[in-house]
Image (cartoon, rainbow, N blue to C red):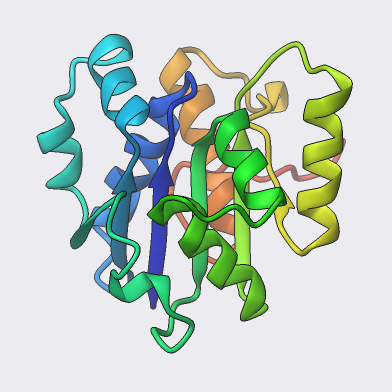
Length: 187
């Protein structure tokens, strides 16, 4: 299975990094990574990672300016795409089909081909314009999956919260991870 991962410029790049870490051990998944310039910047600001080390987690890395990349065409078969984290600028581009970079173009292709597009928005609080963009993205086929902590898992660390959120994102593609503690009901 091929999966496109876009890391855009909002806070929360650790979600995208952790997703790539989890997928790097999964031989059945070929990852195609796109980093926006602001995503690269936030990697340096928010983590101890370098952009190059994050890129090394992916099977294929694409330049966000390369609108002619393989993943910019519907004939390049993928299981879908995850934009994690997704800035409001990138969400706006996706919702309005304004494909001026590869992250937005690849997302547009995923939508037109009726494949699965998961958007992980990272903004708070939200104003009406943000909510309208999320509604529009949902109406054209995207799945919105904000990283919302699940406290029934009794997380002990920030990593526990990040791992659970990323595992839930991967669950949308039927990719099992050992870090997902499923609700078993109120026993």
